Image (tube, rainbow, N blue to C red; front, side, top):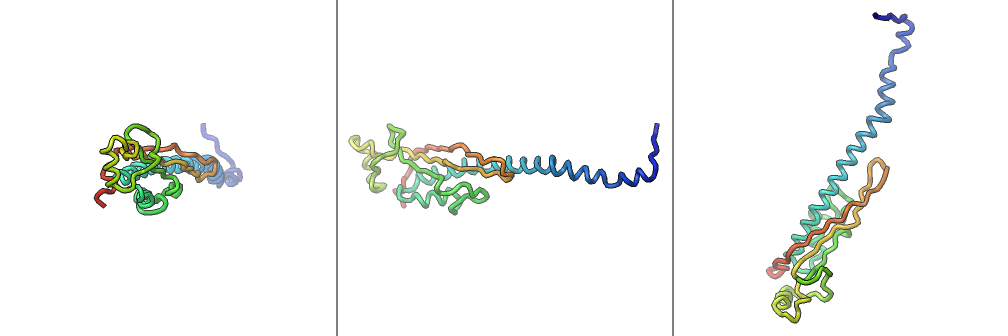
Length: 169
């Protein structure tokens, strides 16, 4: 059965659908889209942290210990913060040099790449031999676009075997 509304009642209903859509869109649709964008951005920053950690570890394994700022800048794709992720800066990257027997950083580093090779060959100086490089990205805080919450991203750590350590520079 089809009900016919009087003409005056039909005229009063014009625009109701547009207003209802605007209200639903404003309180449901747009916040949902913003949350999806935030989730995508959080994943992007997490992935960038992983890439910066890998890149810094690779650079630290081939450059000498005095090149810390160069290593950090290369890991951040040539800048002081990651492109598209300004939350990740050189201050978030820590580089530690480890010997073969301990996961604590070496207290007294060799003076040069040649001295490192000598320390690695000398049993008495094995605690000064840089065998591995440990790079961590810590303290990155994701700032939500919606302003709901700031999220501290998990720490990322990579340990690589030391390679040339700047011997051929």
